[in-house]
Image (cartoon, helix red, strand yellow):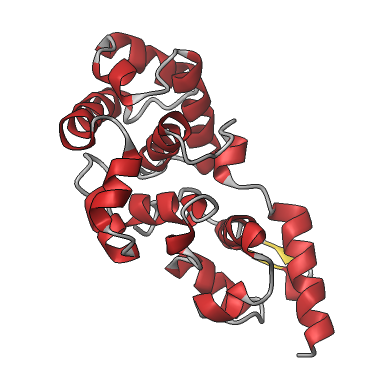
Length: 226
C-alpha cells in the first residue's frame, strides 16, 4: 500500500470516527483533578457489558448530578447515583456500579488525595505502572485501564503512543500498521487519542471499509472481550 493510500485511510478514519470517548461524554480533557477523575469514571462505566453509547450517556448524567470529583462522589447518596445511571438506561449494573463508584472515590481520597496526578507521580512516568495503579480502583480492570490510558495520552505524554490491542487489531485488518510506534508515525501527537478512538469505534462496529461494507456485531461494548 502506498503512503498516499495510508494517509487517505487515516484521514477517513479520523473524519468518520475520530471523536474520543471523553469528548462524547462531554469531558474537556486537561491535566487537572476534575477532568481526569471524570475520565476514570468513564473508563469504569465502559468496563461492563454495556454499549459504549450508554456508558458515555451515563458519564454525562453522573457529571450533571455534580459528581465531578472524588470527594463529591465519596460523599454522594448511593440512590442518587443509581438514579443518575438509570436516567442513561445504564440499568443492568446500576446498583453494583454505584457501589464501585463510591468505593473507588474513597480509594482515590485515601491513596492519592482524590487527585490522579498523584497516581501519575507515584508511577514515576512508567506507563505500565500507571496501568497497574489504575487497576487498584474497583471495577477498573485491564480494559478500563486501557481506555483511560488511550484517552489520557493526550495530556500525559509518557503514555504515548498508546494503542490498545483492540485498536491494533482493527488497524491490521484495515491495512494499517499494527504496532503503536508505527501507528504513531501516521498522525501528530495531538491526534493520537483521536486515531486510537477511531480504530476502536470502527472495530466495534465491525466495519470493513476496505470493502465498503458494514456489518453488525454483538461486541457493542468496550468490555465485551475484556
